[in-house]
Length: 145
Image (cartoon, rainbow, N blue to C red; front, side):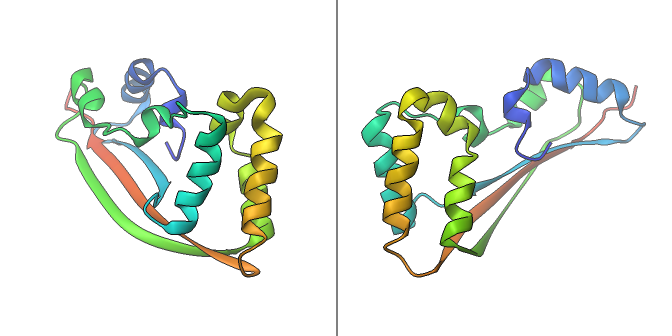
């Protein structure tokens, strides 16, 4: 599940995954989280929180180990984490924000105003931006039946 486990009923998803996995199969979920300590990302977070004071990333930034373990369906959870940076054009970055479903759901009518502010900020940068991420992965092997 790449950037999608958090938008499912996680308990039901774990049960269904266990049902369809082959013996010794693996469940894996992962996300690329923007590094919120980066000054550019801090500015973007400030723009968002000026409009949505209680903005939340939901379960996507939570440790997934407990929910996987509580299912009782998988062996020990392995967590992997690594840093990566992507250099993209400002325009591609703006387009990515326009497709940000979590932001859109929480922003409602403010969404396009927030995107405009992010766009205005980003256009003050160079033609490209380096976005630092931490990739977080949780994996667990199906228990023997």
